[in-house]
Amino acid sequence: MKSWHRPEILLFIMAAAMPVSFGIWQALLNNFAIEHAAFSGVEIGILQSLREIPGFLAFGAVLLLVVLREQTLALTSLMLLGIGTALTGFFPTAIGLYCTTVLMSLGFHYYETINQSLSLQWFDKAHAAHKMGQMVAIGSFAGLVSFALVWLTLDVLNIGMEIVYLLGGGITLLVALFCWLSFPHFPAKVEQHKTLILRKRYWLYYALTFMGGARRQIFVVFAGFLMVEKFGFSAAQISIMFLVNGALNMVCAPQIGKLIGRWGERKALTAEYIGLIAVFSAYAFVTNPWFAVGLYVLDHLLFSMAIAQKTYFQKIGDPKDMAPTAGVAFSINHIAAVVLPAAYGLLWVVSPAAVFLTGAVMAAGSLLLARLVPHHPQPGREVAWGGGKTAAATGDG
Image (cartoon, rainbow, N blue to C red; front, top):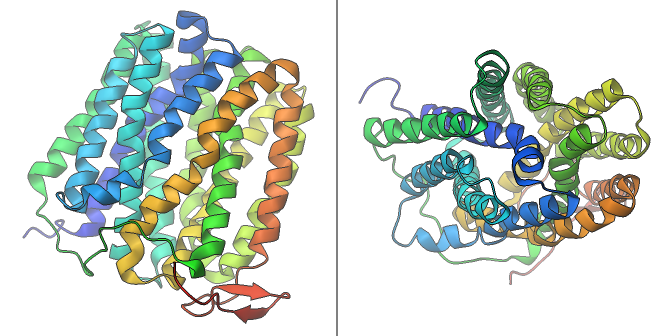
């Protein structure tokens, strides 16, 4: 076996492959939808709700593990992501965008589900937060490449958006094929349960996951849409904003991972949610485009702190539960995500400020939950009541 044939190297390469497709899809979406498919806030909300349906059905990834290894499923999902992205530009209609979005999203969400499971299994607890921060940094660098590609092709070479989508999806597909052919199948450290599992003692992790999914939709769907609709940003300008965002994440994410390791999950999540309350409140009333860009970048940096949710579960969870719980968690994360974008699309027409203010309220709810995370979580010490007093939630279900 070659020296680079290691599980963590495979995770790092896959972490680089995913943002090339998803970054280009995200960077072009608002402009492509408005300029080529005449989308309003209503249609973009419907599209984003459809995009989240595969996330809601992420528990299906666990059922597929009966016939597929996790590593195989992760690479297959990457291929689907690449194919869905590559086809997007060739279907500039509402129905066409809805269909290619669901295909792209199926690959994206199943990859993310299995990637989380493999990360929690292959990284040791002492270094997991830092390693996950490195994965975020690698993804950010790949995102920089994809956003630079968008700027180069659209502004310099004057190439159509459909070709840019094809390039992004094709790169991800080729990298996934390379990994499939080059890496051996790595044996699982612990045989994973292949059935859906819900445990009472994981309830706080489930609650944090649910609130995070609901809150994140406002950022993913409407923060970028605000830049295009309210401030008139072009696709190239959006890509430059993403470049700055990615560069900062590339530098900051590993340090954020180290910070989580030093601070612990309780303090890290508290800092994240206090920051998000301020950011969403500011979004509601922003009138300066450069201030809005600053909020967008800060927003994205704060989401890197969500690594703490994963390491919290890694510390309290049974090693055999990593794969099934990753699937269940992604489904829980997307319960609200299936409904909220379409509902908020209607609210956006009435009051964009109200959309962001509800995000601030959700962040406040997450802050209350974060204060229940113990200073030193472990099995039997999953929840802290009364500031520091830790109690176990007994019983499984």
